[in-house]
Image 1: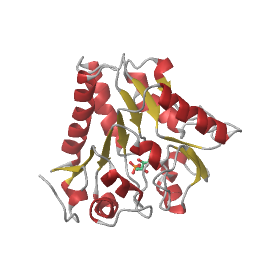
Image 2: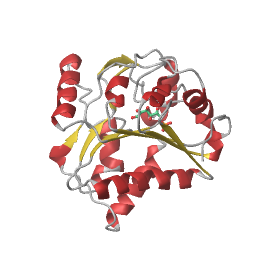
Image 3: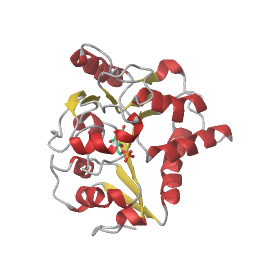
Length: 248
Ligand code: F6R
């Protein structure tokens, strides 16, 4: 039996509002919430909503902590395309999350293995992740766990697929997209107490259909959500069009 809950909204903007509402309600119930945060274009309007909620006094991250889901390898911290920079621009600069409770993978490190161990230890020291926010790649990757990633994988260096590098090329404005990254593993993600995956637009249709309706296994990384006791996919009607198992 899958614990996966599916929310299908008429528009992307409705889906984003609902996902942001889940975060604000979890924060209201638990101001010390430990979040895991994805990046990517889907998340830009989602973080904008969180910043607005904060600006309007409806949401505070003052007692919360946040872990970045993944990072490119070999980029300096201040590279405009780094996920560190993305999260700063799209979220951290506009909310009240204390700097000392922001935990990000250092993709520029010369010792990726010990950086990944340090990160796993920091998650454990924080008491684990309460709510992990996820996007999904067109190949159904979560984080940078490309198809083939083991479901018990932990934070580690990975090779990016050509499809992922092409999909993310826009952020690099003609520069070479890194071939490697550090990512929380699927096992790390499944260790969070709650998972929230946001998918919008027709480009994610096949990936979401595979995750929800296809066989569960490493060839469809997002299918791992069906093994989690408390996972929700929030999407718009456009994304959900190929789904068989839609639930109210
Ligand atoms: C980013 C990440 C990726 C993205 C996915 C979708 O931190 O972990 O899994 O969520 O590639 O990206 P967009 O939203 O740009 O299509």
